[in-house]
Length: 194
Picture 1: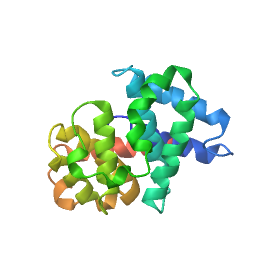
Picture 2: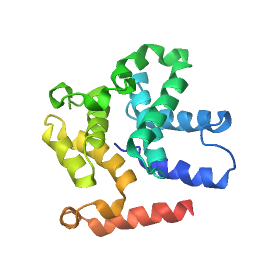
Picture 3: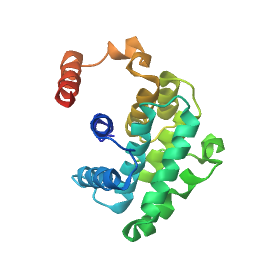
Picture 4: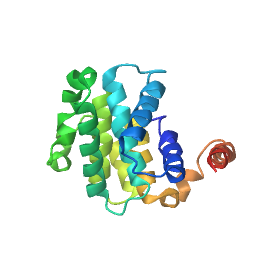
């Protein structure tokens, strides 16, 4: 849930460097950076895969017009990348449900929202795919129960990438402690990329 700024960073980098985002030169650097940042607190390969999935989708959602096809194509790219990395093979199998075409149709009772990284990512993506706006996505994530703050943060990050910051309910923003400080941090980050 703390990885999202990397999606913005790489989006800006891509605009400055010619070529496809998923060409061989850029993809290794992208995933190496994700894995290094993940390893600050979560070095396990399974956590690194989750961060790779999350940021690949988040980065793609920045310029997406169709949610489902963007997620599907991102998952395909991630599955191909990790599928070709022997060191990730044993952990990639834990994400099989995400790569299944029927994942978004799973009933809610089959979605776990524990703090386990696989459950968190599945729950966040399932909420995003089964709602049509930011507010409903975050509320669905919270209402799943268990590790609500983590799942809602991950789901909300993706929903914000797709629906935009203006889709966040004003009454939620007005309740933020130190909102001015948070907004200034975001502005400073944006300025540092420009």
